[in-house]
Image 1 (cartoon, helix red, strand yellow):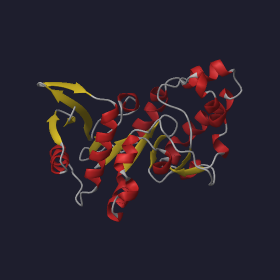
Image 2 (cartoon, rainbow, N blue to C red; image 1 turned 120 degrees about the horizontal axis):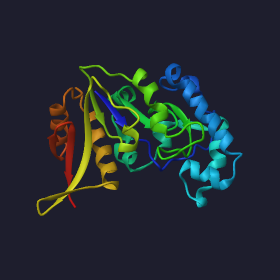
Image 3 (cartoon, rainbow, N blue to C red; image 1 turned 30 degrees about the horizontal axis):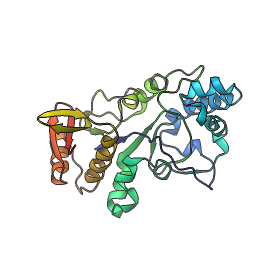
Image 4 (cartoon, one colour; image 1 turned 135 degrees about the horizontal axis):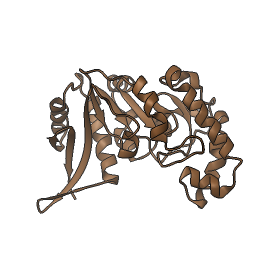
Length: 250
């Protein structure tokens, strides 16, 4: 089993530490060149007008300070991705609170999608940055298209592999397996027999489901086994094709 997580908009900026070592990141040989080109593009963007730069990053004028931060990423302090990503999904995953064996499983079986890095592991050291799937850099274009071909050639995709996908649609657009069994986790509320998809609550649900899966000594190897694990953890779930639907209280 492999678990794919999204990044989070909320990030903690490391106060100290060595800068990112691109050669030490996951898939360095396969994705390194594209990471370098993105960092180069962000450095160039720092020399553009505020309006141009903020539009390219898809951020507001009030966030203009992020442009200078992104332009200096090569020298910025870095920390483990699990510490930098601080959104609600990562709060609910609570990696630090997992038993040692589950933390080891997470290190081996969890990959984090990123518009800037492609994919990283939880322990890969990265700096604070602002670069999401909605960014559109000159000479780069949409991050999903920028990464797609490289990820197809790089990512594990075996017919006997279960991939549990916690990513949002914007990040899932960069890569989907062709051989492995893909199980996307979705969250719904239900009232009077009608279901409604939820967004912010979905992040919490995905973090909790990921935690439940990692706590299993024998990792689920099929959608049915993953659904059974989530159900045993207290979730109301349904398997609908390639989706694991979690129904939560309104």
